[in-house]
Image (cartoon, rainbow, N blue to C red; front, side, top):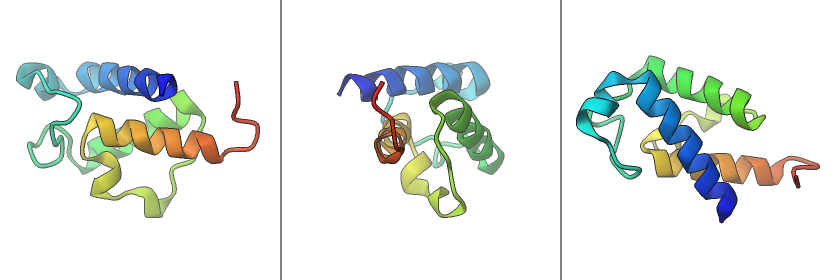
Length: 91
């Protein structure tokens, strides 16, 4: 579970740095970023790029669903699932 906590903290930091509305609204890990307009479709692409670079995972077209990007918690779960699937992912 510590991996998930680490992913949550890193994603939260990126969201707060990249999206000013997230700071203004003091979003929590479970706030729906898509419905509240904190993140739009371009923002989802930025988040995917960040996750690919930060966690060395691949985000495929079929991964772009609201369930994977709706909030910080769901993004951390997505990262955790993809890190576990990668060969040699044990650090």
